[in-house]
Image (cartoon, rainbow, N blue to C red; front, side, top):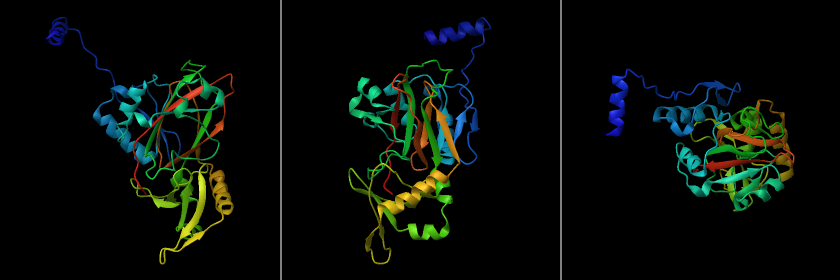
Amino acid sequence: MVHLNLKRLFKCLSVKVFKKNRNIDIENINISFGSKAKNKFDLRNIDASEVTKLKALIEDRGMFVIPSHQVLSETEQIKITKYFGNTDSDSISYISANTKVKSKTGTSDNTYLSSELWHNDEPYLKNPPHISIFQMVDSVNQNVDDVNQNWETTFTSLHDICSNITEEVKLKWNSIHIMYSGNDVIHPLLWIHPFTGRQSIYFDFRFVKQIFSICKNTGEILIKSNNEIVSKLYKLFSSNKDVYNHKWCHGDIIIIDNYAISRRQTLKPSYDNPALVRRTTTAGLYF
C-alpha cells in the first residue's frame, strides 16, 4: 500500500521515476575468445534476459570479464553462480598467490595456491566443474581505479590450442587418456566440447599421474611416456600466442567455461602486496 501511494505521489508531482539501466555493454578482448563489460553494472540486479545473454556469451566466447565490480558476499556469489548451473556452498574456495596470504585467511581449509602451470579446475573429479566464477575479494590496494600490477593471470582458449594440432598428430592422440592424481580419474586428451560441439583438448599440467592410450578396436591399454607427451603438450601450449593477460584489480570478476579455457599465473604479487580471489563453480558432467 505504501509503495502504491508513493507511486501516486510521484505521478501527482510530475516526478519521473528512473529505472536503473541494467543493459550490459560488451566488447571482445581477443580475436577468438573472451569478452569484457564496457559499462558498470551489478550482477546482482540483472534480469532474466541479461542472464540468458551472458550464458550464450560464455558458450560462444568462453569467458567474460567484469572490471571492478562491487565485492560480493559468499551468499551473493553462490546466487550468481546459480545463473549458470547447479551449485552450493561446498563449491566456494579461495585462491591466493602466496602462503603468507593463505595463512592469514580464515578459509585455510579451502584456500589454494595459484599455479604457474596451465590448468583447469578440479580435473581429478569424475565430473569437473563446468563454469568457474572468480572475484578478487581482498587486496592491499582496494582503490578500484588502480590495478594490482603484481598479480597477473593468463588465459587461453583450449579450442585454439586444439586447432594448432596437426591432423596427423590428432590421429595419434585420439586414443590418449590421462589419469589424474587424487581420485585416479581418467579423461580423454581430445574430445568434443558438449556445448559448443567443437573439437577441443583437455589437459591439466598439475595433476598428471599416468598417460596411456586405449585401442578402440581391442580395448588394449598401452602405457605412454609421461615425459614425452607432457613435453609435447608444453611446447604446444607455450607456442600459442593468442592469450589474454589479466592484471587483477579489487572487485574484478571473471567467468570462464572450465572446459574451453585454460589459465596460469604469470605474475605473482609480493608478500607485502597480498591478494585473494574467491572461486565458485557449477556442477560438471562426465566426459
